[in-house]
Length: 237
Image (cartoon, rainbow, N blue to C red; front, side, top):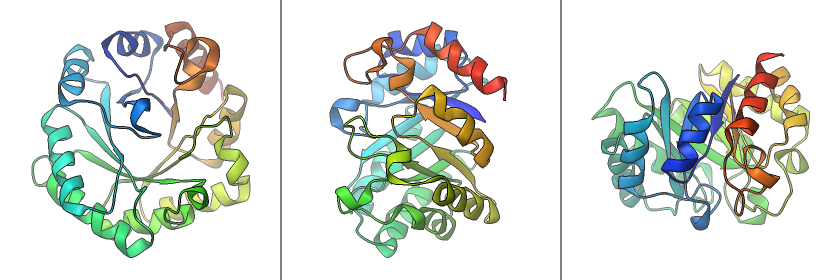
């Protein structure tokens, strides 16, 4: 299971890399759960990140605007991202979500075939009117995406596990794997929950709060010691 850490700037990225993060995920919590950062921030972080470490960029909690989102995907790719992650926030059903993701895939793969496109839903989709989280694997498959992901839309202290139980998460992972897709799970994940995610067969775990001083994704800053602890814990499973 790979560890994805989500820094917001150059300084936090240095800490994430020093701590052993497998994927450096550039995001901007001020703009939401999967808030997008600026092209120059992605570029700066890509330049300081070792070539063998993947850089991910979130496009935001996106609306149902396939053209806008595909253009954002092209911008993130040209800024140096290897992972292009889309938060399917404004899509109300699988048809809308597939349309958005198909156009992102076309925009990304047309420029870089080996780039990784991530379709991300929300475990608490019912709170924001987004597409059912258990539909995400099929959406990823039908759109030609590479990875199916879940996060939480509302960051109020509740975790992924407060909205979906282990059986539901296992169904999500197994279905995605049956399509030949990778999976990622995030959503205020605590270090004591990592073992359950590992045992589910999750391929990537996404963390920000647990890697920050004080454990707060908004007021804390990513610390290499916390990242190292998370990385060592995963390696011990």
